[in-house]
Image (cartoon, rainbow, N blue to C red; front, side, top):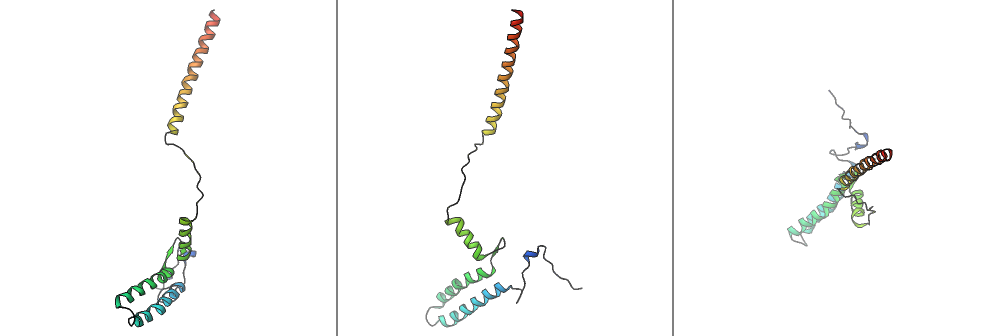
Length: 134
């Protein structure tokens, strides 16, 4: 039986081109191959083998990262710019201070007010009784 895979969310759909890779991934992999293969082949004439290998890795890593990296539906460029903005631009921060004990303080004040009201009510009743008796 033939099955068709349907993504749960339509915006997560990525069209696959070659070997299950998207167009962006194919382009980045192709650019990395076009730069790194000749560098590895012909770089041995000018640099030692280990240095050429490290140069290939250092050059290919950002290219592959740009093609394959996705975080919260952001490409690498968008993620890098957001990360840079969050670290290097001033942020608007609102100062608000709410101590932990404020709720306890409010409860204590409410109880104290209730006690004072009860005391005042008791004193007023006592004054009325004294006036009537007096």
